[in-house]
Image (cartoon, rainbow, N blue to C red):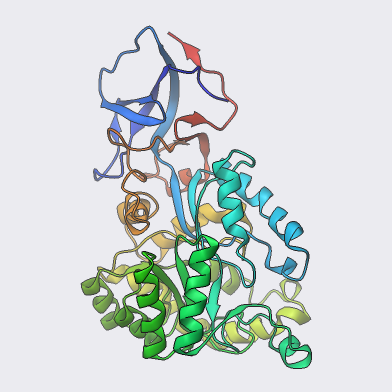
Length: 411
């Protein structure tokens, strides 16, 4: 649904949080014009070409930004590319209707399909959040992004964007840029679901990480790294990555190094709580996930301690969920998880708005301010008083366009 062409839209919630102030302000209104914020304040009045929408009981705030999602169904990696691409259509709609107006998709193993999804959303072919795309996950053979090493050894067919050494890595980054990358993603170390490397491992040498980051910088592209171990995180920060994904086993000292370097942490904490909570549930695991379960059992206590560590530091934290490893409808649970692990409400909510926009170098997003893009959501309740309000998204606007089916009253 879209307001009539050339008409303004005046939004009247109970309160507005602009992601700049330390809390919401009661009684403010927001005027939207041509997909952007025209004015914010008290006593805004509707003109003859203004539609109005009252939002009783709601907090109006910037749309959520998730800096770490996987839109494509990894279990469909061996299916035709067209089918795997279509697996992303329901998650995109789900995320948008749950208030996520921008997502950074950090790649799949094989084909750069998220670039096509980005264009399809932009062209209005499918409904979904704005997509910032890292097409594929660069990984060494046997690393976290090598999805089926046995298949490669037996038949010589690899599933993954695999590269090592200076020449291969430069070529791989350039191929990602040619495919339409907004970001470059590489595996700095292993993970809980890795076929070859454990979460405590490190995938690339310092020189190889320099090669990836410097090649990306030459092409004007920032880098994100999947890294859990302290060594992997430290190497990636030294190489100049813009964001570290996960970082569960990084030390306080390394977080201080990140803070000094201006490196963002995307902590993705709910996904780990999701799996830790299932460790004793035999029905949750099967033969294909038994190895993952054992890895979680081996690292469980270290992981629980690691989840609580970032909140005690000043590292700049941007919101990310790793959605795709758990149901997309539960993405909001990252908010209470961060609070439970020591983050303040303000830091948590900014991580999904203004801080996330800063990470993505999109100053037009993540705030309610004049001339900002009108990506807005209205929550039932006040998230500063009850963080579960983040699960009660009542209205979603994308560049000023109403997504949820509501009737706009005219004045």
